[in-house]
Every structure is written in structure tokens, then in C-alpha cells.
Image (cartoon, rainbow, N blue to C red; front, side, top):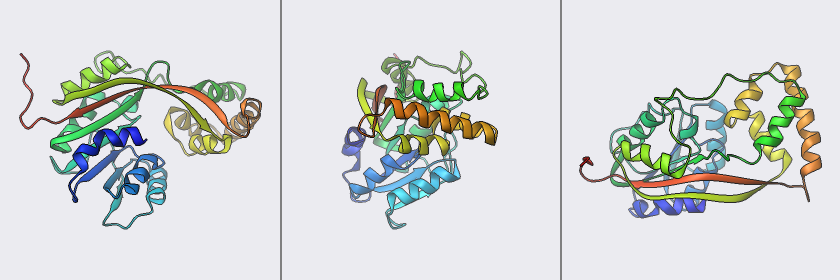
Length: 251
């Protein structure tokens, strides 16, 4: 998270600068931004996630606020924020290009956007969670594959292409890998709260299937955890872009 915020920090030097965290989830990014004494607007469409973000930020209303909203319909004025972060959000929206165009709309000229998505390699924890669903005979969700005309390559290059299409100038495109260490309880809290596709799938199950999924998760996690932590290889694409003072034109 420090890296993500470091990338937008040049746009946050004014005392009154505002960071927009789109799809704030559990509030990890928003909390880190508040820790830098930044003014923060955090958006999430889900009531539970919005509540968790507010608790995580634990800041006065004049410094941080939470709004229930989602891309591509943001209740904000054009050019009203100095920086935008979208951490693992664009890969979950129905129209990624429209989502980025909306993020560009609310960003001031000279402002910065930092966006991450899972690559095809994805989140390392997916195999463990998927095994728990399979063992519980959980129903499969409808295909999340976007129509061809809306989809994009899940790579730094693919993310950069649709970011440029939103009228932004890409300054960083990178593939980043890391090890994510998390306790089984913390990972399960995310899933049971509806975070990401796995969370949505969990909440879509009958109560008895949910209980079975949790039981299998606890059993599987216990075999994989070391010193109380799970350790997953993860890979993501990162793109950082700026909003030009004048619209970009193709040549």
C-alpha cells in the first residue's frame, strides 16, 4: 500500500489536496492515506464495506468521509479531486473503460491515478478458497467473463491501453509480485464479508452451504498455515497515470 500511495503523492502536496479511494473495501488504502494526514473521500457501493472503511479510517468528518457509490457513476464534480486510487477494482466492474473514464473525469488536470488489477496469475489464495467451495458442493457463480468488446488484457500493457483510452497519460506500467501473509481468521473475515469474487460467491450460497464452506476452509487453512499465517504468492498489474492539462489527441 505504501507504494500505491507513493505513486500519487506528487499530486497531494497542497494542504487542501483530496485523495479519492474508489472501491475502498475494508479501508486498508484509505487508512494508510489518513495516516499521511491526507484528506480522503472513500467510495464503496456495499454498506458493510463502507462501514468497515469508516471504522478503519477513524478520522474526523472534515478529514475523511465515506460515500456509498461505485464506478462508473461517481457523485462528485468534475476535476474535483487531486488523486485517485483504484485498488483491485477495475477487474471487477462491468465496463472497465467507462470506469476509468469516470475516474479521469473527477481528476483535476495534473492529478494522478494509480490503479491495480489482478493479472491472469491472480491472487494466490484463490486455490485454497476454491477448494473449500468445491468440497462444500457450493454452486458456481455465473461466468464473470466480460463480453469481448468490453474486456481487456489482464496485464500491465492491457491496463495501460484502456487507461490511455480514458484520456490519461501513463507514466508507470509494471507487474508486481509479492508474498501475502495473512491469518486464516483475517482471510475468512474478508470472504464472509463479501470481499472480491470469492466473497460474492460465498454470500450467494444457502446458509447450510455457507457453514460447510467455512468448515472446509478452516480445515484446509490449518494444513497450510505456518506459525499461524498463510503465505500466498500474488501478482498484479500496476498503472500510474496523470491527467493532462489539455485533452490528449491521437496522431
